[in-house]
Image (cartoon, rainbow, N blue to C red; front, side):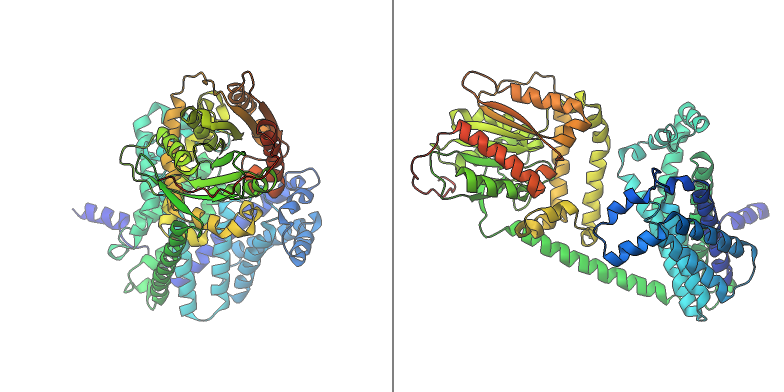
Length: 630
């Protein structure tokens, strides 16, 4: 019985570590990380020279939008001589922190130098820096500030901050992994071990030989990361197994996956966790100031409330839409939000109805719509599919692509007068929906414009598309849960958003920062994957005019995409039908819409297509404002 109690006391309980000892262990482990990092960079300094992986002449292009002062400073730091000198200095300071005992302020200055120099060199080593460097920066700045102050309260606040960062690093990583199917079914670990970058042949063979053990180990890693804060429960009784398990996890990764720096960097945060998780009445932590924990809790509560308020305000703006929006209800009970422009268009010209891609917005077509309305004399209708923007899904049956096809047909029949011709314009998935809707519109349909469209056989024929599809669903789930947790306030505005017309930028960003868009995208993706995987072909004929505009970077990256685009276009060929295929030079899948120059070129091709297939006008007809037919 005594032996059991002794083993229990060894395995369970707090890890008694004093304030000074926690700071000392953390700074030495972080110094070991920096020493290893700088020695590695010095050994491979050929990579920073001209033609190397980290050639500054190439990397500095990523900072063209930085201020002139920042660019000059980066140019100074990133010269080969300065970079080498900094790494030599970092090596000397790191060695000094490891070899020289004490707790003087000079050690604080050394920690701050290592942390700040890492920040300065981070842009320089764009390829090669990783999470271990970021963790070392956090530890060195915290321990450096703790060494330079005489206030125990400030030191405790810094250790609480470092402990909170350690908890976050595990919890966030764990819950993100939990969204991936491969981690849930236990296949992730063997999959990682068989890769070239992080693989280890003997370990992979063991995982393949003992799949149940590999699955248990995979789930164990998930549990360790997701439940890391359990170290703080019951007076820190679980601190030893939790911290010990995390340490063993990193040591194993260092050996098996070659992540040596991760061992010392992540372990450098563990002393702060041990210090803050011990009960306050333990002699080792006597006098510990825990007000930082309360302050963090209050800040978190305030930030959560603020994020919820911002998210609610954005959602209300998204649901309301601009003042010009209207709604129509389809046969499935879905209420679609749409806008029509070009009310002065003549009745002899077709109406263009735009269908957006998956997880996209109607505003992506703004550049195109402006050009078409101005130069082709056509009216245009943009709409949001069920679940996007202000459109709501009322259907109760499981979602299938046919539902969105029916919605598009119902929208056309409700909004466009029966005597007006229609051209469907679809981007990405919208192109496939337009192709399928064409069969139901009969003689009202004038033509289809495909903008880098999806092909129903692409997941079977394109290895690249099939490989990308495996992780796409997990990415959508990650976005949904992140936004549901209020992290939309941290969402950065991407560059493509700045390329859109200023009038629609805020509305597009509101939609992307709202989980509804990603929920609708995930619902569509599940239907797309099921539908496309089961496609047996062939593509049926579509007897109307067609224009195919492919993005150059799409077809250059995957030649199978070009073949599939041509196949879609060929399905329209026939006597009296105009079919044209174009590759938009330099454009990507999205920039062909969002970038003004590419969109203008795509619009020019569309205007030429409309002029060559629609009758020219000798007079202006009656102005028509499209609204739902009663």
